[in-house]
Length: 232
Image (tube, rainbow, N blue to C red):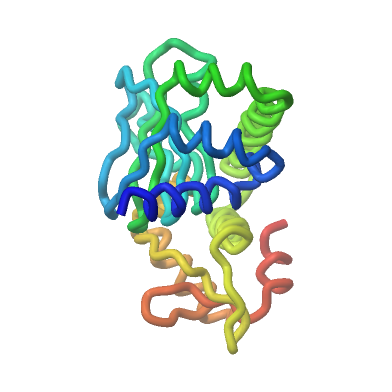
């Protein structure tokens, strides 16, 4: 059983974009330095303000990164799919977590402590550069979302959120594209800094316009280009 678990861990590691270029012995080093386990929807991996110093490698499932504002409002900064690394700031910033991580869909995750991750970055040429680029890209995404909150309508923000989520969680469907992740209207509200009631009303408006539909609580987008046109 142990050998099968290790092989599964290695298979996932080799299929992560950030680790795909590494040699087999480095994949084995990462596997030895990390612990893989199952995660369940609703599980909190770490909390804002905690002293958690782990780096997380999401093999399967989905995890949302949230932050409480000074007014006590929760906002969703990002949602990660399988194949993502997160919590990486603990490798370069000794301060407490300034965000929380919660499981959105059941899956598998590997956990590595900060010291082992720092050793890995020093031992593997180019890895620290990749991590730095990843952090910059994520900060750029957050900055752009903040601009959307200021200059875009709720309808535009919701449409853009659906389009962005389709990039990671969209699959072809006989009616267009299906968003293969179940988020509540509260989740969408936290993504676009709105309320659940406003999100529900906006979903209904988009549906009446024929821009979205629903199938078994999943969002379906019949025409991606029409929805994109609403974003701007």
